[in-house]
Length: 151
Image (cartoon, rainbow, N blue to C red; front, side):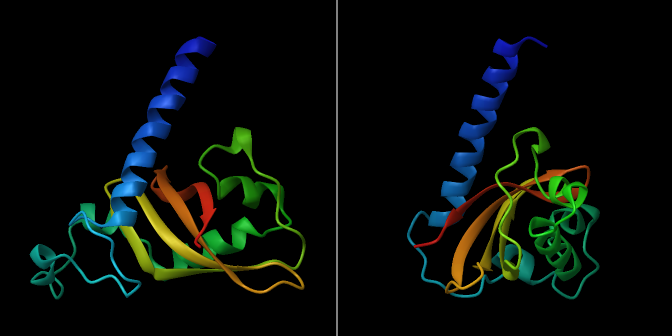
């Protein structure tokens, strides 16, 4: 594949991801939503006690997945660190040793294979900050595409 085609694909993916992230951040109703735990969509609430479909299971972010992803994002091991990112070819700088990252799985929202979740990041000697992680599914697991501080 030529560099021009790869660049075009990367730009198209970035535009789609930005649109999905904006849609998730603003809310499906189009209005700004207050910070509160996400409630299940009305159409899905009647299925809460039913066995989840394979598609529903595939797009969920479990507590174990959230803990593993958080651990990999602050890992000293480069293999683990790379595995947390969607595009391991363009890794951001690693966080300093001693950084704590806790993903709040209750804030997870997704639309098919893209999603967002908030995480509390505490750098050594600094106050905790809330960051939003934009996630993409890769090989049937969630990986981080980018992060932005929530202000």
